[in-house]
Length: 285
Ligand code: HEC
Image (cartoon, rainbow, N blue to C red; front, top):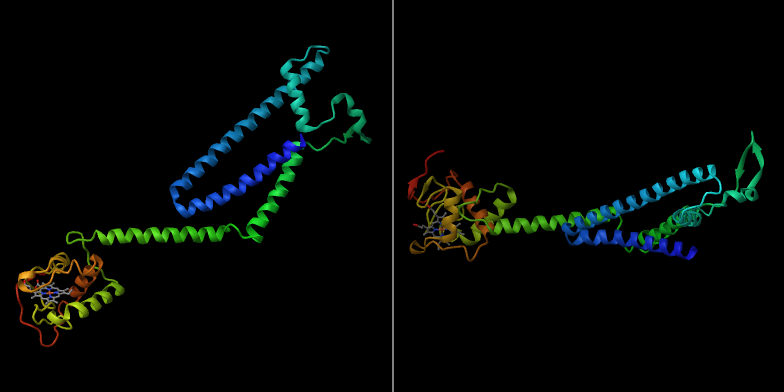
């Protein structure tokens, strides 16, 4: 019997550490399996509670049965009652009522005696189990450090989420086009737009957009429209017949968004040597 208890608790402890490792592992891979794991835990808890309730109900009925049996002595015990008595004894290791005298302490208080019963095995091994568990836990997490602690787990999950955010932003950037493009205003994007402009566009449009072979980009006059969507479209597809290159193969959508946004910030800067206006004046909004 003792062996069975020990085996059960060894199993329990290892399964708990496994569950914790598993939780970390799933946190690393993805959140969907993490939810599966939560569901499994909830179901096992529910099953455990049900079993516990059955045991309690059984216990209560046995006590009632015992009390009733005592009243009508000599009555035959049912087979179920006898089986349960055996289970009950192995769980509690209590000395039977008939032999209580043998474990009774000498002292008595107002006629109340104290019994020196054994600790119930289910309780005792559960207690040993917690001790074993704590040692396994301690070695696993604090000595061998084979699994991350809560703070590390948190950091791992945050890093994972960060990766997902970046992946999402990449797909958003890849889907940028002339209909959904918006003006970016942060310094990093505008500065990157400026760098791109100086490197790729300044030869034709001037160092500060004053114009040259290509039109002046600082005035309110546009041949192909001056909204962010128009500019993005011109940059993306170019005007090959007029000598404006299509940039979609050379720049990423995000780069084209940055450089287009930068061009719009040049509005009204009145640089020296500005080229004469071309196209139509854009209406004030
Ligand atoms: C080889 C010269 C050349 C280069 C390099 C060049 N462009 Fe142009 N670009 C032109 C010309 C020429 C036009 C005028 C097209 C027309 O007349 O329709 C133009 C037109 C434009 C327009 C439309 C202006 C309007 O009035 O509607 C924008 C915006 C523009 N370019 C942006 C850029 C950007 C951004 C770059 C760099 C990534 C760039 N261009 C590189 C020659 C160039």
